Image (cartoon, rainbow, N blue to C red):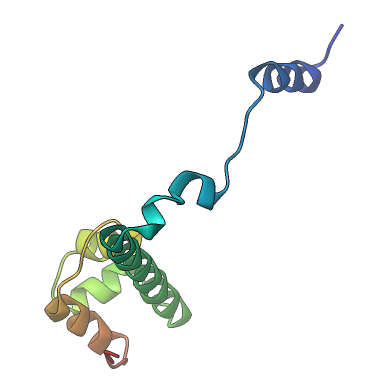
Amino acid sequence: MKNKSQIKQNIVNKRQIKTHSFNEVFGKDLKSREFKNVYSQEIFRLRLARQIREIRTEKNLTQKDVAQKAKMTQSVVARIESGKHSISLETLDRIAQVLNKKIQLT
């Protein structure tokens, strides 16, 4: 009789999961200026979200702490940190002030 691990492995083997590289999936799109711009913006938003979350946690602040000090709701901070939503410069500035950081555009 097969154990659960063997059964799961057999299922995976039968499906023959195939992986694709980034270039295989987006190779043609990478040549498009529009795609490059949108992709760059998305990467920037994700990095900014991660940076905000890391700085907040380094300072031992909760999302609620940041939200109260920045005069916004906790859900706004959560959405920003998720990286799934855009952030206005005004909102970014309010968060930066709470975290004692300056915004530098290059």
